[in-house]
Length: 128
Image (cartoon, rainbow, N blue to C red; front, side, top):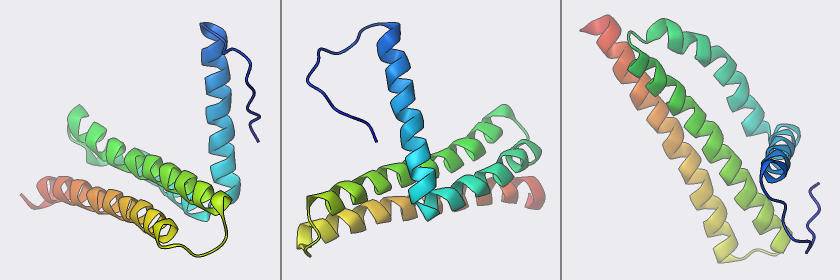
């Protein structure tokens, strides 16, 4: 877990290296603690080669890949929101439920976006 201190922040390359380390720690935490993140990351391993096979242009490949990465990004943000809400307190509160539901809805919208992008490109490639 990352420790927070009141020391003056680092600058330059040291700050970038530290930030990269924190990001890697976050990815590891998501992998270790979030089943949905693991499932979506494993699907990405399958979808990356499919994107290169399916896309006819660099733009199509980029759209296919970006749509998948947006799901991971959204899942990371959803997990962060859930962790903060759980940290604040275990009692039920309408705002806590709303925050978690809205974050979950963001993941759903990102998944729907994958369906639209992939569906349109598949339709264009095979049916038009």
